[in-house]
Length: 199
Image (cartoon, rainbow, N blue to C red):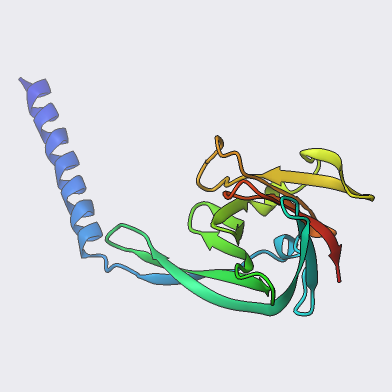
């Protein structure tokens, strides 16, 4: 009988403590916060372009050459909010450089942008084709040791499709290295664009 009374007493104490702790937590005010996520400087260093960069590509299907001139870098911020009561807002940095050609209608856009919980990505858009890769993956061991375009050899080549969308079955891809940037693009119009020079 005494054992039963002790058991009931202990359970009553445990319940009382739990109820009070729960009440304290409910009464505790939510603290909403805003966090700014910037592109890491080490990832920015993997893009060799400046405000004055000019890229010349050959369109292999027609053998025509096109020069694309930088329109400069610009920075903006997106935002994302966590889905909970005491939510956090993340201001996510995006840095973009745009290249335009006077003789070709489609620009080349390269962006470095932050996805909440996914880190940052480099995204290249050209001719209705998107290529994306996490800059952390542009490192040794590379996809290829070298790539030959015409008489020029390039080294430490990363090849990627659209990694953010996990589009691994896409037949389109981009060849890239840290010293020259975009080297070759296979686009959705079944064409190939190869770098001739960077100025």
